[in-house]
Amino acid sequence: MCIFEKIKLTGKMLEKITKVNRVKRENIKFSIIIPTWNNLEYLKLVVNSIKKNSHFDHQIIVLINEGIDGTLEWVDSQINIDYVHSKENIGICFGLNICRSLIKTDYILYANDDMYLLPDWDLELDKEIEKIGHDNFMLSSTMIEPFDTSNSCVIVKNYGDSIESFDEIKLINEYKNLIKEDWSGSTWPPNIVHIDLWDLVGGMSIEFSPGMYSDPDFSKKLWDAGVRYFKGVGKSRVYHFGSKSTKRVKKNIGSEMFLYKWGITANTFVNNYLKRGKKFTGSLDNIKLSLSLKLKNKWKRIYKSF
Image (cartoon, rainbow, N blue to C red; front, top):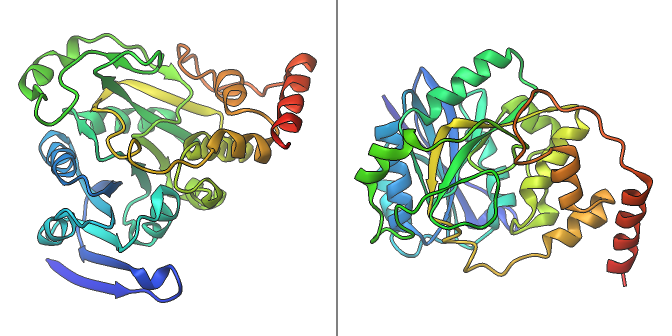
């Protein structure tokens, strides 16, 4: 049954935003939010990968920033997709937050539009959630990327860095043979949390708009709420073409905002608290920074304030 509900919002920013809530379904597992900014061909690819490679049925919510390349018309024609449309690019922080009221499951999963989700990506996440047995966690899938960027959380293997060069068949045939252990320090999308945790910490922090460093900030808020289970699931795989939208956006200085807000650098947080990229060994311990590291972070904060 398809129920169409088109909601026009009011207010300075809200009056430029439309929410479309169309499909009422039972037995959906996750609510997947995909922000997109005039990136139609990649959006089609990630949506189709979800439809054909998922073990479960999911709610798909597309956040359409502008959508002047045909994105709005294409998404509007897909009756099994809910969406939010903003006439202007509101970024991922405002964007993910405005999508919250469309969520129909217990779990919110954020994925980028320049990704291809591989078979059973969701089954592996669901297995992990069942194994954990509580909702105080943040999980990430493991990305396969075409180029080495010294990111210890990813698998480096080139199956194409664009739609034109993408070798989907070869990727499908080989991805299970690429070795990657579970890793610590979930921040990267695709990431998933329980909706109660999302609400508890207030979703994304809009001071990081349009979005640089909003990922580690969200993890830091979860940390302060008592979450210690931050895991990258090695068997849950996605292919990531790499920053097809962020290369075009005018970036905020997120590293400085993180330092001003939390009194430590993002690197200090992800390396010392989350131990990001290290082999996953279980829930993380509370951290006490050394005096030298405390002084180093304090000096950086003072230096950056001038």
